[in-house]
Amino acid sequence: MTKSARVVVKYYNLIREAVHTSSEIFEVDPALRWRDVIELLAERHGQAFRKAVMTDDGLWAAGVRIFVDGRALLPDGFDREVGSGGELSFFSAVSGG
Image 1 (cartoon, rainbow, N blue to C red):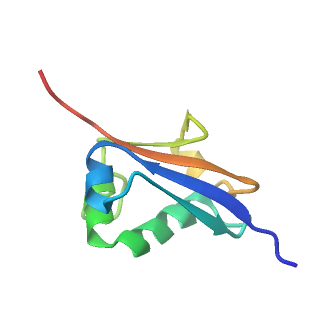
Image 2 (tube, rainbow, N blue to C red):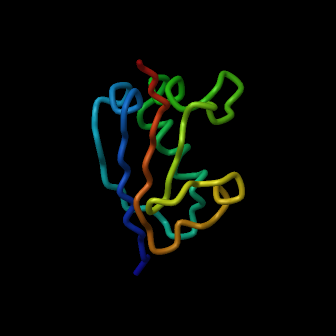
């Protein structure tokens, strides 16, 4: 029997508008890296997700913050394995006055 990890994905602000949902749940291989999960999301949601989260050259957009279980996903964390799963959250910068 293959084990899987539950990943709850939550979208906020402009990213929620781009993907037309506030959350979704995935079962993934625990050996996947967080980077792999984000790429799966890009494949699922297509250009709208990529435009909201990434730059034209595939890097993470400066105004986007990604969290795993409420902690900022720093550059070295993208290559951590998903393990037992967790909550992946995407926030975009919001300006106003």
